[in-house]
Image 1 (cartoon, rainbow, N blue to C red):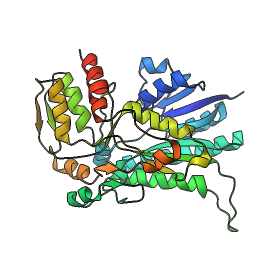
Image 2: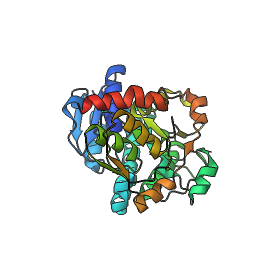
Image 3: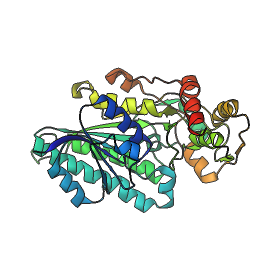
Image 4: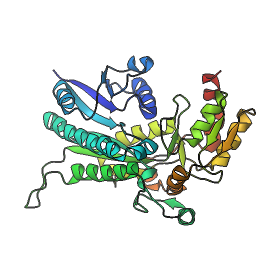
Length: 339
């Protein structure tokens, strides 16, 4: 008999660690974790099984279809924004074709189960694109349908995968008569702001200048911030990111008015980050040395997100505002980690 599980791809990343920890304590469904890198031992113990494997390996995914009854897929695996710009073709292959492989897998699973499979997909503010800083600042809060003109391969990948999800959720195998087969994929997507974790180090995101300041300062290492002090982006701490994923997964299908939802918490400048870090670590040596290419990317992303749809449809609200995030989560936990 096939075992019911929740599948988490990219399990060894920042979101994966937080999600595994939460689900292990709050869900009775066993966790099947997948990553191309070995999973941390502490996380492995929380999973029913960890598989060292690649989402591009269709034979592996085929075996999982036969061995498990996967009710929900949290597809976290991707090549992030900065790394994607160094090799955009590889990023496209992993981020898009890998997602397509998993959407096909969800279809197969649903046919076995005779029920739609939930497909939870974290997208990004990289899906947006402003041509100038002045237009960015004038726009204020941006909703899901505005300014979707990404300037990076990562952003293009994310936006296209949102559309793939919409296709598989609403239009897969349309017939010439206009009739459709029963929907097999229950696609649900979050557009995340910059994410900050106190427990894992940043892994190549263009918004990582904020968390990098904190981790370098706590470790007693100098840090050159790659953006200007006035740079502003929306952010969220990892516990709220995990909360939003779980809330969206738990929402009834009937309550969802759209497939893609913004979520956010607070929008500090890089100087605000610097001030919080120096207050906590007075001896920190942080300088601003903007990198022209990375600055241009950050300048193209919104200063704030309109997450009113998520708040209305599935009662989203962050537990951590700016002060709470720094004073009661990030700084105490990071300080203890590097003690």
